[in-house]
Each structure stands twice: as structure tokens, then as C-alpha cells.
Amino acid sequence: MIFYIHLPAITFVIMQYHKAILHTTEASTREILIARLAAEGYDGFEETDDALYAYIPTDSFDAETLQLLADQYQLAYDTETIGQQNWNAEWEKNFQPVVVDDFCTIRADFHQLDVVTTHEIIITPKMSFGTGHHATTRMMVANMRHIDFAGKSVLDLGTGTGILAILAEKMGATDIAAIDNDEWAYENTRENIERNACKHITASQGSLEQLPPRHYDVVLANINRHILLHYMQDMYMLTNAGGKLLMSGLLTEDESVIRKCAENSGYIYIKTNSYSNWICLEYEK
Image (cartoon, rainbow, N blue to C red):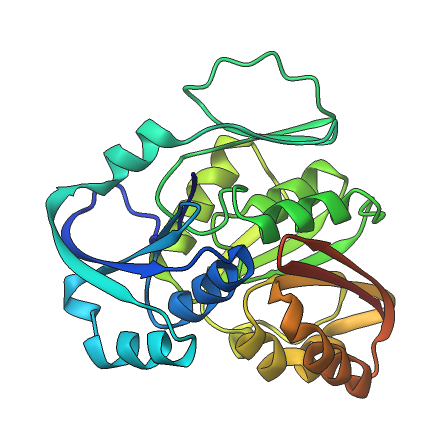
């Protein structure tokens, strides 16, 4: 059983949720459904061999949207209402450390580990996308290993919990802008920056347009297809000549349209990495 939780990073969450149970034995279909449902406001996912459980706050549940998606993939589904509970407590109880090869460990402060990786990131395990458990975050971390961050300027667009920005500083970056339009993600990023004693990260809440005009040596963007397509040209304009773009939050089926947009914007394709049905793309300006 695989559990992904992508809820806003807040200190204490007690609310009522709707659970949608979509019946499918196809792992690739479940991966696509996770991406599609996340875009509709679903923020927690649990996979079994024959179903996907998707969670959404009751106030945000839309039966018609779920029906249309199930019809598109010809899936049977059920729904149920889950009583109020402390979701943060449930998340912390199930939160496990993440180890990316011998390169980076991501853990909570209550984990007792003998860390043997090059880098260690300690986060407050609030319920937010970007704790390192999701395939796209893991791929971003793994691919950052091969980029030179020493003395570089970095933009982490859609920073989430700040993991990528924190790792960039640990790898030697000296000027890092971490931005997210979600207030709770912004607050959690600030908390994690302090927890990891980072000195070179400036966190802000808002969109790319609100950043001061400047250029970066490395742009990190683990968001989703829609946002990446929307900001591709802007990211290109913000990237220094010879600079890198690393992006994920993408399904395999997104690769052709993302590559076309990136290359039309002027980026030079370097490589694609994949895990399950997710991809991570590297470009250079």
C-alpha cells in the first residue's frame, strides 16, 4: 500500500473529508488519476492493488467532476464521508524517513536514524506536498545531485515545504528564492528553513510575477503541467545563459507537450528521467 498526502502545511487540521474509491487494477491508471484529481482539489491518496482512494475536504467535493472522470476511464467508483479527525496526527503517525540513495535523507526531528547520506534535511511533517515521498520530489532530489550548485543563484518555483531550496543551499547555493502561492506552504517553508539553519534562502508567498526582476543559474520547478506551460517563457527569461532548468510534477503522457513548449521557449533539452508513470526533465539555456 502506498500513501501520498498532499495537504496544506498547517499545525493542526481537524475537518470532514469525502473519500472517493476508484476501482482499477492498473497502476498507470492510478498514477494518472492522482494527477487529475490533485488538480481538482483532492489532497490525499492511498493505493491498493485494485483501487485508488482519493480524499478531498467535504466542502470542496463535486460529484459531477468525479463522475465525469470515472466515465472517461470507464471505472466503477464509490464515495463515503469520513468523520472529523486530526489529520496531522494521522500523517505524523505514518510519516517515514526518505532516503535517496547515498545522497540525501529527509526525516522528521522525531526520527532516530544513523544518517549515512551526504545530506540530511529535517522537516516538520505537516500534511503538505513535497515531503519527499512523492515520486516527483524524489526524482528532483536525485537529479539535483548532478548539478553544480556551488555559489549559484537558484529559483525554487512552487517550493511546497522548501525541501529543494534547502537541498540547494546544502549543495553550496548562496542566493535562493523559494516561492509558493499557498500561505500554509510558505509558512511551513519558513519553519523548515529555520530548522535546517539555512542562511541563503528568501521565502515568499505569491506568484512568479511578484518576484523582483532578476536572473538565476538554476530554476527548480516541481509543480504540474498547467503551471509549467503557463510560466515556461517566463522561466526561460529568468534563467542565466548556460543555466539549468529542472522540472517535474509531470506524467509520462505530458512529456511531448512540455518538451515542445520548453524547446520553443529556447531551452536546450538534456535528459528525461522516469519513475513509475512520472518524469523529471532537465534543460539548459
